[in-house]
Amino acid sequence: MRALVFEEFGGPLTVRSVPEPAPGPDGVVVQVGASGICRSDWHGWSGHDPDVVLPHVPGHELAGTVAAVGDRVRNWSVGDRVTVPFVCACGHCPPCREGAGQVCLNQTQPGFTHWGSLAELVALDAADVNLVALPDGMPLATAAALGCRFATAYRAVTGVGRVAPGEWVAVHGCGGVGLSAVQVAVAAGARVVAVDVSPGALELAAACGAEHLVDGTAGDVPAAVAELTGGGAHVSLDALGAAVTCVDSIRSLRRRGRHVQVGLLPPAVGRPEVPMELVLAGELAVLGSHGMAAADYPAMLSLIEAGRLRPELLVTRRLGLDDAGAALAAVGREPGIAVVTSF
Ligand SMILES: [Zn+2]
Ligand SMILES: [Zn+2]
Image 1: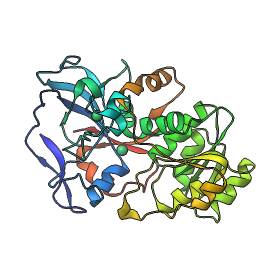
Image 2: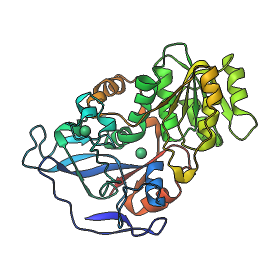
Image 3: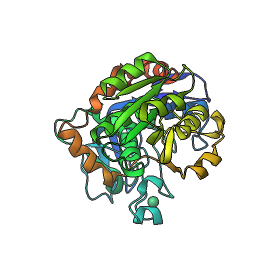
Image 4: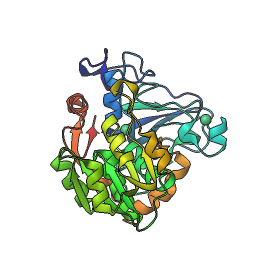
């Protein structure tokens, strides 16, 4: 099969022929119909993820059709249209038993712990735990955006941030996950302040329903958020994953506000100096959010089917696999989400 491969961290990303995967006894192989390109792929390629073993095939935001099924899989057959969370859970460890598969102790992640979906075929583990059936009529390119960024933002805003109608939400970083968070927060009835350094990203944030836009290059971001929101946001998200956006997010909160860390922040990009004096004095909550388990997808999918959430608005570029390497190396330079739709 054709796949995008890198042999060294930060090295050339080339499309070449590699052996086809076979399904494990509990797994499936999916024929990839669409695969998004995400900042996490860039982290993996850059050598920031200790799970990645060379040579490697990136890609974790996928949708496609089941092509082969392991012996022990009960719920899925060849031809089913599916997506998966980027964290594939085992289904039996303590967090999984509590319904928190997104922090599974034995998790696998396509494109990180094994070869991913920037390829014609991808193997997925524990299919009965992790596969999500796509509604009829949902295009694969739209569904590919759900597997990581949209689902991650949905859970960060609703499940972890517990955003309530009328609250102010600040979103720091308006890439794929940030734009998704803007949309989800607006749908939840919140008022949104979007922060980014790119005018194109801020334009998309406005189209997703942000009420105020803050240029991240122009001065004191937390002070700007405090002024626009009458004292600070109730909920603030670092949707980029950088020391500066993390600290700005915490400083943007009003008393008893909730910071949600949703952008990956590996130590290689620098650890933030969290202002714990503000956390204590303001009784701030500092929360982490890591994807979303497959069992939590139906509520989000029904909002999408009802037209209240529109992930397709975030897909700004469709590429062939041959252009995926250049797009991966340049993640963040163009607004919106790039999705590979031909392999
Ligand atoms: Zn587990
Ligand atoms: Zn991702």
